[in-house]
Length: 110
Image (tube, rainbow, N blue to C red; front, side, top):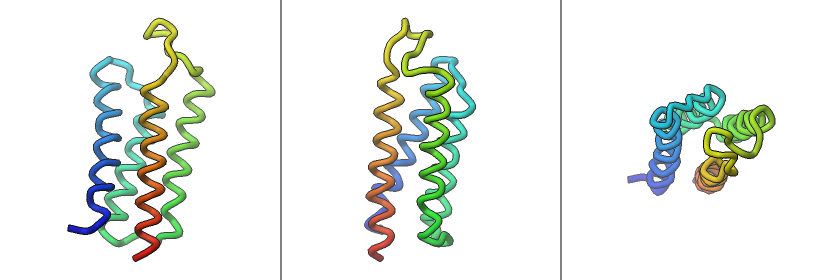
């Protein structure tokens, strides 16, 4: 097993969990799901070894950009949850970015 495999699995599970939350709560937010798919595709290509490391920051930056656009369009709170702060969004996005940063760093050290 590659040293980065646990990170790839963790990041992938975060993305799948995020998609399942949207589907399970009937709150399909295309821009957020697209950001999840971008990360999943990036991980699949990266794990296969067919990706230039210089390119690794692009999908992560696009993921962040899409989530920032989502927040700009929809606000920091969720009216469908009584106006509560989007804490799950922040936890998932921050976790994705942190784990992805560690993954990219490990890939650069190979």
